Image (tube, rainbow, N blue to C red; front, side):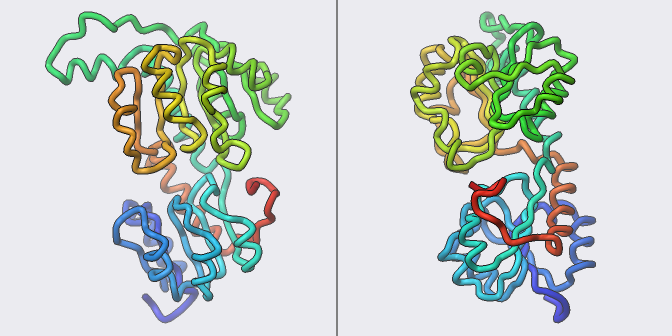
Length: 322
């Protein structure tokens, strides 16, 4: 590390994947070091590595607890290259006067594109038939995919990413319904979206895509009881956060066909060990790649550089903190 400027610790791998962005960071903050150990970093390693720093650019790790922050006396700012803050405890940050930065919707195009691609993959059975081909066989059955056109697509959470999904779905001729705690009347009118309550969303969606923030109101929302409310034969996509959908309940309903197929980009525990779920022929798993388009990495990394100076002390209970 250099001897000049604030000391910065980078725990996110984006910068090493993008040398030109790494140079932008080092040009502004030459006193920067990069974590090159195993990922995800443990709380103990985080504290050890960041002991002397004033600014942390983290990954998505739920480790900014009272214990961790209390062990980092020099820390002033956490600048997140992410569109979610479920790994940040706002009360702890405020108590210690730690500033936080994030930029909502920074990776919305990347996540929305994946969500739409997963919908089409499921309903056309792309992954299922590809798996059979990879086994050396030619599929004799199971090629009876359906059109997305004419289906009812439900969007649970119509914020930055949900709105982007709506825009991407416009050419497909689908009926779009959405449920959100906020009223987006002008947007709904412009894009022909019908706002509904959650029960209606669950009962009427042929395809349901989840774009909720992870907070106290959404963790565990899709319980066994809620999954039982979903339209029989629904296609379910979650590119939001793990822990929102009960994975045991999902597995049971995939096995008996109450849910025709599902795709998860996120899991309650990552890396996931839910192999019995992953191995189901009507289940498609991706390893949290929603925001992993290179263009999204660039935008998020630059946001973190910018946010190192623009961060503010969070207010618990004020969006996006619950």
